[in-house]
Amino acid sequence: MKRSREQEDVLARRRAELIIQVQAGRLSATAAAAKMGVSRKTYYKWEQRGLSGIVAGLKEGEPGRRMAPRDPEKESLQREVEQLRKQQGVQEQLQRIREVLQAEVVSKPKGSATKKKGGASGHDPESHG
Image (cartoon, rainbow, N blue to C red; front, side):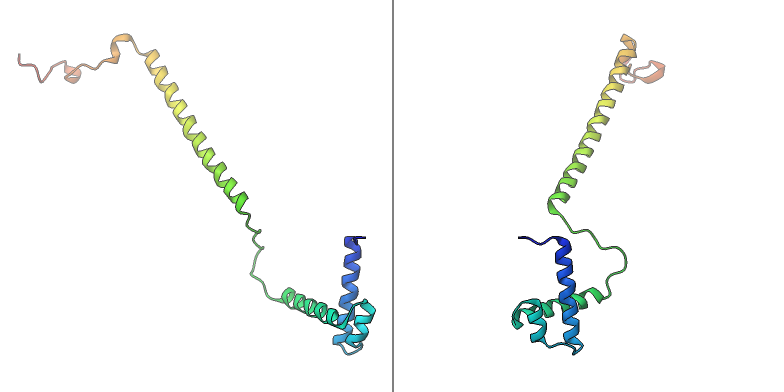
């Protein structure tokens, strides 16, 4: 039968108490192993793990909040979403340009679509006469 998280926590605390008693010289490793119901070899394995955990937990860490673990699939999807948003923005701009051009074509009088040579004076510099 699988233990609950609470039962696991109680068991881990009990192991920690026994390891501390052994480290303080109040209890032998053999006695602690017997109280845990394991061999001395297993006791020493747990002791090493527990003491390593204490050391790791007491090291000075980097200031600030820890970075969230990287998820390559999530990062890839985020890049894809950003790319699609850019493409959508370009498509929306193209649509607005089409609408503006369409509105200009519809609103201009029929003859104003062609430009006369020579500008405002009407003089054609290429004509010879």
